Amino acid sequence: MVEKTNFSSAFGRATSTTALLAGGAAAVGSALLGYGLYETQKFGLRRETVKVLPRGAADMRVLHLSDIHMIPGQALKRRWLHQLADEQPDYVINTGDNLSHREAIPALLDALQPLMQFPGAFVPGSNCYYAPKLKNPFKYLTRSTGRPNPSDRDMLPFEQMHQAFGAAGWVNMTNRSYSTALNGLRLDLTGIDDPHLDRDQFAGWPQGSSTSYQAPHVRIALTHAPYQRVLDQFTEEGADIIFAGHTHGGQVCIPGYGALVSNCDLPTWRARGLTNWEHAGRSVPLNVSAGIGHSRFAPIRIACPPEAILLTLTAKD
Image (cartoon, rainbow, N blue to C red; front, top):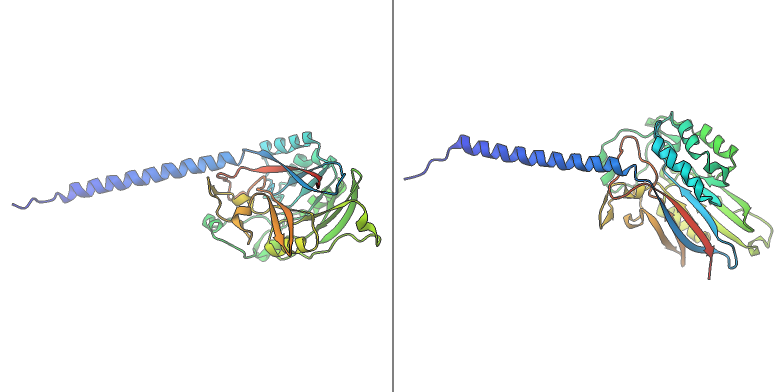
């Protein structure tokens, strides 16, 4: 005798299983989203020490800020940035992407006001010039070296921001070089406009007398996006240390593995932290910031909390 299957009962059980699976996936998704939102507020200060100064030079403390992506109303971020002034850095370097909203400049300047009491330098990123756009979040999970199209983006009032930085004494390093004295040492800086927008033009190093290179000095290079062609040029041209941002450290990372993307052609294992970039027989410390903020259209971080970095530059052995 052949046993007949109750189709209605089987269909009901399958539907219940599907519903349970869907509910479980939704719960996991909600938990990840909740954690991702929470981690955007886990601000931290990474501390590094790197030997790049001439022998006998005194230590120099450099605070590296990047990718603040300020939005009006971010009180916790503003308070945390205020507190960084307690570290009393000798110099502040800002590698761009300061805004995520055209009305955010007052909040940004309020947040940075205590830090603008210290000397510093900056380069812009694309989110200094243009407001972010809503786009498919899965695009962040593809390896991209393409540039955004500025023609379909809203301009930000970056001139107001740059004027305020300059009035406080921060030097605009957009496609230029600059030299200053600090703690008995000459800082030679070079910076470029954002390579992610193809606006970079290397200006070389500051020119001095024919014997100026013999004086104690350190060569510092600034870029927003750490494209390999830029890092190669800085390295080949004699940089002692390179500062960059842009990557957000991957923003969504896998614990134990790291970043899935760097939003440029930088290898993902370099998307956050202090590593050595090697090119043309030279090895140069490269500090890539995971950033302080995020696009207002992608307000999550997973296994990649926001950071500023305090680097103590010390003398070489």
